[in-house]
Length: 132
Figure 1 (cartoon, rainbow, N blue to C red):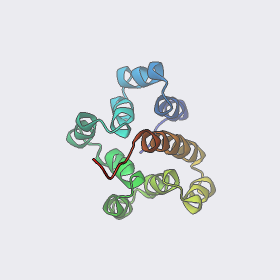
Figure 2 (figure 1 turned 90 degrees about the vertical axis):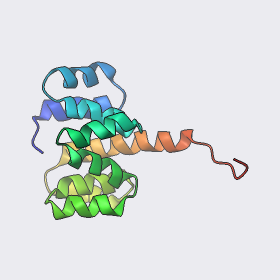
Figure 3 (figure 1 turned 180 degrees about the vertical axis):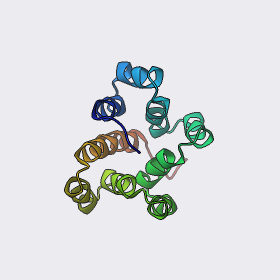
Figure 4 (figure 1 turned 45 degrees about the horizontal axis):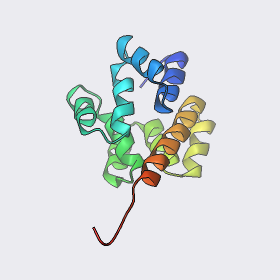
C-alpha cells in the first residue's frame, strides 16, 4: 500500500470527518480511501465495496481494529505488517504504535490514532442494556 504523503494526510483528515477531503480522495483516484471512511463507520455497503473492488486489506484493517484476530492474522500472512500494526495501534496497542514509528511509518501511526478516535466515538455512542 503505497500512497503519496499528501494522500495519506488527506486520508487521515477524512477519517477525522473532513468530508471535503473524503470527497477529494474519491474523485481523484483514491476511492478506496474515501469509502474506507464509510466502512469505518459501520456502513455495510462500503465494507462490501472494499471487498468487491480489490481492497480486502483495508477491510481487514478495520476488522483488526474491531478485535478480529483472523483479520490480523490475514494481514500478517499477506506481508501487510504496517496495516496489521495500524490495526493493533488503533485498538490501543502501544507496542504497535512504537513499531510503526520505529519502522518509518509515522503517517500510518497518526492515521491509526485517528481511527482509534473514531472507533472510540462509535463505541461511546452505543448504549447497552440487558433489558433489550
